[in-house]
Every structure is written in C-alpha cells, then in structure tokens.
Length: 202
Image (cartoon, rainbow, N blue to C red; front, side):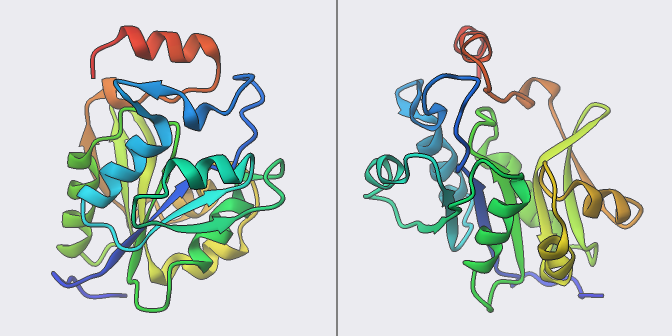
C-alpha cells in the first residue's frame, strides 16, 4: 500500500461529456455567478493545485474547448458520451500521465464544489496511506473523490454509472472521509435544479 507522502502529485479528472438531455441544452455552458459551470469546476481544480487537469468532453466538444481555451487543461474525448459514465472516467484516467500518483474525480455539474474541498482531499491523501479519500455530506458520500494510482486498474476495469461506485464501495473500509457541509451537495440536471441553485447562496 502506498506510504503517506507530501509530494504526491494529484491530477484532476472533470467529467463533462454528457448530452444534458434533461436540461435541454448544454448545462456545462450555463452561467452561474458570472461564469459557466465547466469554467467554475476547472478554475477550482486549478486553484487547488491539481495537475494536470483533464476535462472529458463528448457532447458539443468544440464549444467546451472554446470556453476553456485560455486555461491550462488537457482534453480527453469520449465519443460514446451517451453510454455509461465509466467510459468518460476511463478516458480521463488514460490522459493523466504516468507520473501522477492520484486523481481527484469530479463532476462538472456539481456547482458547489469548492477549492477548499479539493484542497482538503489532497491534504488528506498526502497524510495517509488510504487508497481513496471520499467527500461526505452528512450521511451521503459523493464526488469529488480522490483515488490513488493503486486503484486505477480497478477503475479502468469497472463499467457503469457514477464515479466508480463499486470500487468506492469495495474499499470503503480503507477509505478516509472528508466531511463537508450538506449545502455543498448540489448538482444540476434539470432547469428546475438550476433555478434552485441560482436562488441559493454559495
């Protein structure tokens, strides 16, 4: 099992390939508090020191590229973006590079994920030999999640929805948990979801 290290290099994988079918438009380009959802996610990942930051695109990829053209990100394309989420996760992990010791996996539509949350995940990973660090909102565990490289083979073998749910479950007894306010657990799938987020405070 990996030993704790302050020099662990942690990359970021932002899943942003979906078709946004329930929204009716590309939700990654919706604006909240003056910036698009995907830009919010990327800026927070970069500010937390994640490197590289991989953005997995699929639906309307060129629009996402243009939106992020001034930011130092790596793009990975999931051409089967209507399939299970695992396909996007696989593309993102493949794009990280061999020198990355862990990856924070996050969803582009989890609009209340903060730089602080990401920084806490990385700090926890650097101070423990746990194979993964999980965000916990009250009784609910959800992304962002930090996986050490030792778990990448299991993630790459996994298929399904969510961010490696079965892998997280099978290693839950080894995981370290970072507790965050329940109010930060918010994603945007429908126009109603987005309206609710707009009306709430960050």
